[in-house]
Amino acid sequence: MSERTTSASWAMGIVKALEMDGLDCRVLFKQLGLDYAALDDPDARFPQDSMTRLWQRAVELSGNPAIGLNMGKVVRPAQFHVTGYALMSSQTLAEGFKRLVRYQRIIAESADLSFRLLDEGYALILTVHGDHLPPTRQSAEASLACALALCGWLTGRTLHPRKVLVQGAEPLNLEPYKQAFHAPLVFNAPYDALIFERADMEAPLPTANEAMALLHDRFAGEYLARFSESRVTHKARQVLCRLLPQGEPKRDAVAQTLHLSQRTLQRRLQEEGTSFQTLLDDTRRELAEQYLAQPTMTLLEIAYLLGFADPSNFFRAFRRWFDTTPGEYRARLTGTPLPVSDARTPEYTAQTP
Image (cartoon, rainbow, N blue to C red; front, side, top):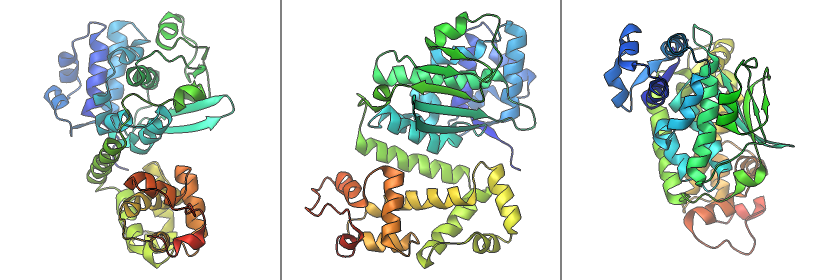
C-alpha cells in the first residue's frame, strides 16, 4: 500500500496551531527528520505518520491534550490547498462541503469525509485513519475545529452547530471544546462529526462565483490526477474512461486490463479509500460535467459515451449526482434559457444539443 501523506498547506496549519502554545516547530521538525523549508512548497507532501508523531510530541511538550482545537483559530481557505478556493466560490456551504468531500485527498489522505442530510440536519462526518501508527484525537479535533471556523470565515458570521460528535473520551477540561464549538458535545461517539442546521448550509455564500468554482474544480481535478498517477485508482479511472463508450465496464475487464486479479483490484482500491462501484460512479459524474460543457454534444450522445445503454438510466443517475436534470444543468452552465420541454424526458435528449 502507498504511504498516506498530508499536504504542506495542511501541515503549515498544524505548525501555526502548535506555535500558539509556544512550541518551536523548527526544532520539532528537525527532531522528526522533516524538512521545515518544504512547508513553503504548495506541492510538497509529508508522511501521515510524521504528522501523527508531531501531534504526539506537541501534546507531551505543551501538556495540552486539546491543542488540536487551536487549528480553528488559524484557519484560512489556503490551508485547504486548491480545495479551499473551490469551496469559497461555491453557491452554498452545502455545495462547498460536497466539493471538500470530493477533493479531500488533496489536503490529507488520512481522512475519509462524508456530507449528508440527516433528519436532524446536515452532517459532516469525519473518519481519520492512521498509516502504520494509529491516528491521534488531536488530528480529528483539528479537522472539526477547522471545518467550523471555515464556515465562519466564508459566511462572515459565527455558525453554531446543532451538535458536535467526538470519538474520543470526555476530557477532564471541557472548556476548550465549549469555546471552539459553542454547541452540545457528545463524546465517545461512533465517529467525529459536525451536525448543522439546514438553513445555515443552504444559505447563499457572499463569496459565491460559479465560473470560479468550475475553474477551481478543473485545477483540483488536475492536481488529483498528477498526485494519483502512481495509484491504482488513477489507473483504473483511465481504463474506465476508455471502456465507457463501449457500455458499462465490468470489474473483471478493468482488472484484466491492469494485469490484476479482481480480488487484488478490489483490495487495492479499498486501500486507497474507494471501491469499483464508487470509482465508476465518480468517473461518470466527472465526465458528465465535462461533456455538458460541450454545446455540440447531444444528451443522448453523452448518455452513451458514459456507458448507459438506456438514456433514462443516465437521467436518474444525473439527478442523483446533481439534484437536477442534464438539460437544466447545461442551461445553467452555458447561461442559455431552457426550452419549454425542459429536457426532463429521455425522449427529448435524442434531438436536443
